[in-house]
Length: 227
Image (tube, rainbow, N blue to C red):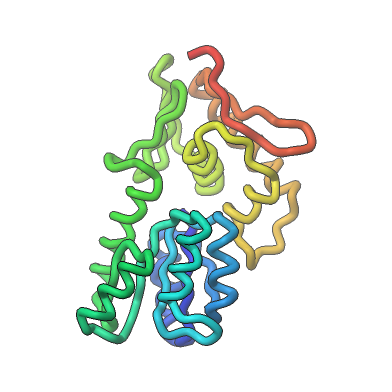
């Protein structure tokens, strides 16, 4: 799962990035409100952690602008202010949840897990498409027809998670590269090809009827014509 952190306090941002990466999240960080809004608009993030007090544009305005543009990514808003009016303004701006600094890391992680389940539409931790089911907790892939299962590598899991979450839509190589490796990576598109091949082999191993189809000159889509 890829998170976006928009936080201008350097020490706080560094600590949060380290914590979240230890929890196996992919994290991109921006310290400026305008850069944060631009990143949100890319649509590659599963959750946004958004500070209120930011240079360039505050968190309330960022959330408002994102929602006006139809972006539905869950937003967890962080602030040092605990007044009720500030919490109401944050939620009215489009935030899904609100956490006041300082906070316990356990509470932050619990709220992220809840938002993550909402983002993926997997209340029970399972994602399904065609004849396959992906367990978001164990990274296990199972095909219902064969009953076979296999554990995915991290990148394989993220590729399949992204394809399932987009319900069979065609995803471009650029979208996949940004989603899996992020803005701050210099990943080349051939890396997408390599890990796509690995993911296809896992689908073949469990004898899934669901396939990853290449759309020439565009990208990839998940398709299951036989179910």
